Amino acid sequence: MNVGFDASAHLSEETRKASWSAPIGVISSVGFSAIFGFFVLMAFLFSIQDFDRTINSGYDQPVLQIFVDIAGEDGAIALFTLIMVCVWHCGLFSMTSNSRMMFAFARDGGIHPFFARVDGKYRSPIRTVWLAATLSFILALPSLGSEVAFSAATSIATIGLYISYGLPVMIGLIWHKAFVGMKGPFDLKAFSRPVAAAACAWIGCITIIFCLPTANPVTDQTLNYTPVAVGIIAVGALLAWVLWARKWFTGPAAEVLEAFRLGVDATEPGALEAAEAAVKAVPEKGSSSPKRSNE
Image (cartoon, rainbow, N blue to C red; front, side, top):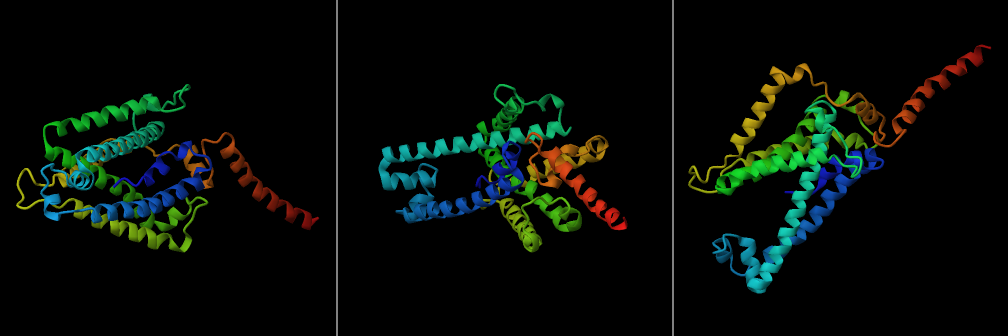
């Protein structure tokens, strides 16, 4: 389920007027993906020639069977090659997003500051790009000898993504007053809490569904190991925080938080300083009027 909405958030530090354009990018990507995804699904469904043959395909891939039925083997190879190119670009997008998150985490002290560097020539966090590529390669190694490991890795990608976004939404829903003070120029106002509640309910629903077994009877080869993998990551993160991370990790850099609060782009030269100066000038103007009236 890669609709691309998170790319707008991950690349916001490289976007002009990110406090406004990033939320617009998130909403528009979801809308466009829903529209085009609907037509893609309809095309696949109406292209099924024989349902039983598609489900029990000798290719072990129903989509490839559909392509073979409607375009022959040569046409199916061409169409599937196009899909492989699209999947490669999805992987490239994921690695780009991961590298930006790792860079932000390194800048804020979450990982070693060695990775908190932007290359002067390419104007990109090259070190975290290589870090993301290396970790992705290591994560994919168990999949070479086990389909179960591959299924678990792909399931984690979906569930982990939505849980990671659902947690801050849920925190903002519970501690709403503190969250309101951090809002930027893009604000849903009265719809904020209902949308947040619906998002949390949806994430909870799909998390349970994606943890269920996909085949019956359930054996060691058909068991969905996603809950185990997600649980290990969750327990590990909690233990790391309780035992040592809470003693030194203070969260995002103060400049980033201040830029977020003022609704300005922290990467735009002089933007934060100008916003802070404008805020300081407001009480000064207000304090001058009483003096004139007393005189």
